Length: 276
Image 1: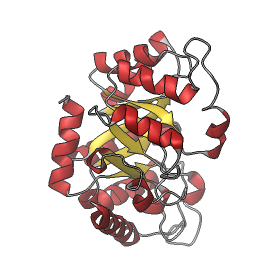
Image 2 (image 1 turned 90 degrees about the horizontal axis):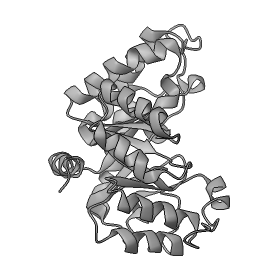
Image 3 (image 1 turned 30 degrees about the vertical axis):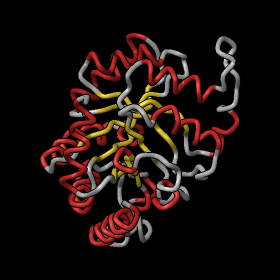
């Protein structure tokens, strides 16, 4: 078994969980300060305090933290991200960089190197340039596991997934999946919003059930996906990395407290145990 999968399963058994906590603190969603004024998202201290409190609240119930790199591009946000990652690692969480890298050659290398230096264990790739094998190789060379986008959870993806590849005559989603398997990627992205009887999902399941590939499954909660529906699909539940972001960060809206976040994570874990 490959290192990332081994670490996932070890942590999963220890935590009795397959949950992944998303970290993408949108500026409009951080709520109000003690004076009732909008928090300053550009304040490094505000972002640091909020993020560290969130990590502390959900860490007992999740296996990994998945930070969305797009939300840490502002100068102050970039400064606090290493501290947030280091804190999450100190709590024995696996770290996933949700960067969806989609360029070629040296650009992908730069992305992988940067996130490896930040402390990530894995990185998401969206090889729209058609270079899935190369992208996975770039990640592996730098000691990162690769998670390849296959079935996205956003509805707009439906316009793309059925395009036929001119060389293989396969729909695009299947071509990307076979490329990812060939490249020995550690995990693939499968959105939680697909119906259990969806033939595309059945195809993905049949192609991967005999491998040790993990499934990063975003869309639990706010996007309409549910744990119950995921486990009706036939995917191996021990390999499902069930990812929730807004439903954990803001379970009661912009002013959700750490206690609210903790209760939301505990409730998700309880749902998980009903189906394992």
